[in-house]
Length: 233
Ligand SMILES: [Zn+2]
Image (cartoon, rainbow, N blue to C red; front, side, top):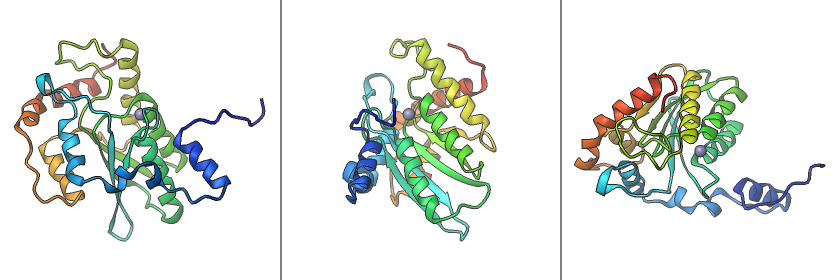
């Protein structure tokens, strides 16, 4: 086969087609929420991601907020999100970061802080590593996630929603991603990180719900277990 590909509704394909047709298609056309979402709604999604028991909510919206320190001391904030079930927030982040890097050079050793309401899936862990490798490891990531995406939690009894294979792949992805960072920087979201993110989003007062706080100790322990132990089910 030559360069022919099947066209699909994947946003990257749209961008390419729009470019070829010289249509000025912007990110906002696909993801109005990324630029227009109420910051409080974004933060609410973080604290509600992964609530257990009767408070459990199926959350399909994934937001990724990145804070990039610039050489002049200022900070660039990127707000990224998933658009379809196959286009993940990390892909949007890498796309936006690539565009940003075309205009502004990051200092060597820049640490980009990322908050995301679900941990990266195995493919997105690889995407983040590939991006790091592509710019000569000029950046590393400090990544805070509000819940584990498709990973069995050691402290939870009912894990039937996640297959063993998916669990293993996603854990392996996180382990590899962790190895590429300059320090141990995959961290569970908590009250302090909620405050940090609120500040980045320009929210002055965001009460941290007791229901989330109650589960945080367990969540943190699960994250430590998953990241420190060798691959287990
Ligand atoms: Zn992903």
